[in-house]
Image 1 (cartoon, rainbow, N blue to C red):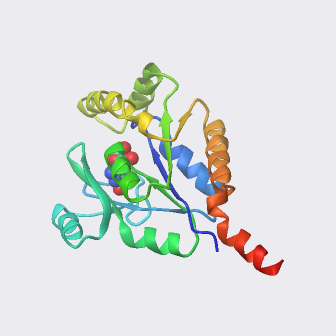
Image 2: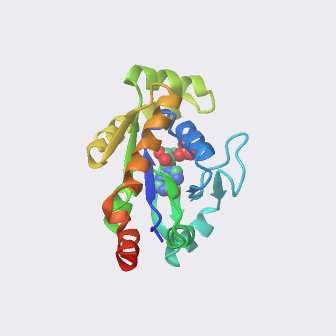
Image 3: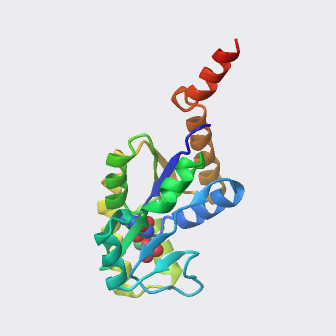
Length: 202
Ligand code: 5GP
């Protein structure tokens, strides 16, 4: 059995990485999504256990203490973290899993899973990023300004990722992400068991 691949996607807020990941997962139903835990409040339309597990700070800190998170970070004053159990279950069952997390978390995960697929989503330009952040209309001006400042420091870490995708059009970004994952599946190191099984039959 092939081991599952860990796919980690990051990018500044407003790059549309959520839409890209959503479309990608829609096309690849066999790939599961790692639902993060967070202490931020749900945005309109967001559901507990679907978009995030919305927790109190106490509940989140309890998860940290119990070692139940693969990684966690404080982003814009709120905690965000990746529950470890599901990752282990999925990878162990030979299923790919996608994490959409910030750069601090991704760099942590890279240390633990160096064979993961690390993908950074870039906006077509900073001007376009600003337009998208304002257009979203869900965040206050102060939050938009904070997110623009954070975007620059996130982009500075892009070079730590094996792949970068410019999200000019969602369908293009999804196509490139699919190609990256397919190429990873074709890596010889991910097919050693298959090769060995064939050799036994020769
Ligand atoms: P948002 O509040 O817009 O949903 O997410 C804010 C930032 O937190 C995004 O960059 C998102 O990728 C990141 N994020 C979401 N879940 C996690 C997580 O589990 N761990 C880390 N480190 N970052 C996360």
